[in-house]
Image (cartoon, rainbow, N blue to C red; front, side, top):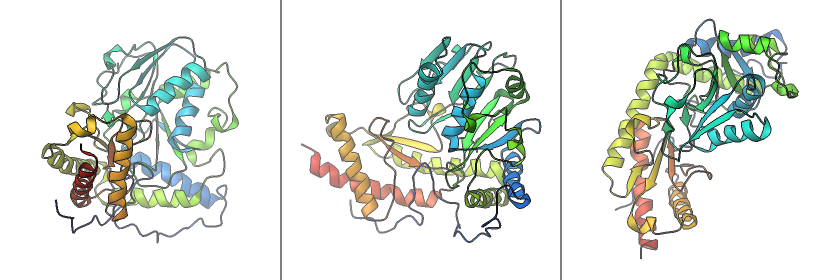
Length: 380
C-alpha cells in the first residue's frame, strides 16, 4: 500500500481527555480567572454546569446533580463508600475499571454479601442474574473492552435495591434514567472537557438512602456526600479548577447549539459507519467485541486477527501494536489509539461526539499503512 497523502484535521483519538469539540481554539472568555470558587460568580458558573448538564442530558427534574473531586474515579469511589453496605451487592464487571470496583467492594470496604458476575474482555455477563432486592453496581460502557450495555430492560422497575452506574464515556447516550439511582461520569470523556471533576446524579430513592443510612466505616472528607449538601447548587467540597469549569461550559454550549443530545447520538452513528466500512473490508482486523448489540459507539476496540500476529506471544503482540501506533504518530496522522495496558493486545479508537467522521476516514489508511510495514518486518 502506498503511503497515504491525507491526514486527519484533528488527529487526537485518545479516550480521555478526548479530542476537543470541532472549532475549539481555547479563546472562550475565562470569566472567573483569579476569582474564588466561593464567590457568587464562581458559584454561579459552577451551578451553570449542573443546569446545562441536566438540560443537555435529559436528567429528570427530581434527580440531584453534584460536582465532586477526582473525575469519574473519585465519583464512583465516593458513591461506593456512601451507599453500599445497607444490603447485599451484585457487581457486574467485564473490563479493568469494573474489576476495580469489584476489588474495592470486596477488599477495601470488605462487604461480606457480594456476588461478582465477571465476563472476559469482549463479552458481557448475564445481566438477568441481577437481583432487584440487592444493590447493583455496573459500568454502562467498558472503555477498555469496547463492551456496552445494550439497554436498561434488565433492571427491575420494582427494585428495592439501588442501581449504581459508572456511566463515564456513555453519558451522552440516551440513558434510561428511571432505571438508574446513582450515576457517575466525567467531562474528560465524550464532551472533550479537561479532566478534573466528576459528576454524581442521584434519584430520590438514592437520596433517601443517603439521608437514612450510615455506613459502618469512616468516610474521608472528600467522600462525605451527606455532610456537603450544597454540591447540588454549585458549592464544591474542595477547590475546583475554574478553567476546567469554563472549558466544559464551552463544550455544553457547543452541544446545545449543534442540536443537543439527539444530534450527538447521530454523530456517534455516523462515526460507527466509518468503522464498519473499514473493519468489514479488512481481512486482518476485527472488532474486539463480536456481538454488535453490545458494541460501544465511543470506545471502539479492534484486534489484529492475522495468523502471523496470533502466533506471537502476548508481550510481542503489545510490542507490535505499539510500533504500529508509533509509525502513525510519527507522521502526525493519529495519536493515542493503543488500548489500555490492562486490556488484551488491541487498538482503541475513541469515536465520541467530538470526533469527525472525516478524520476517522483519514486515520484508517494510515493504520493499514503502518500494519503493512510491521507485517513485512515480523511475518515469518
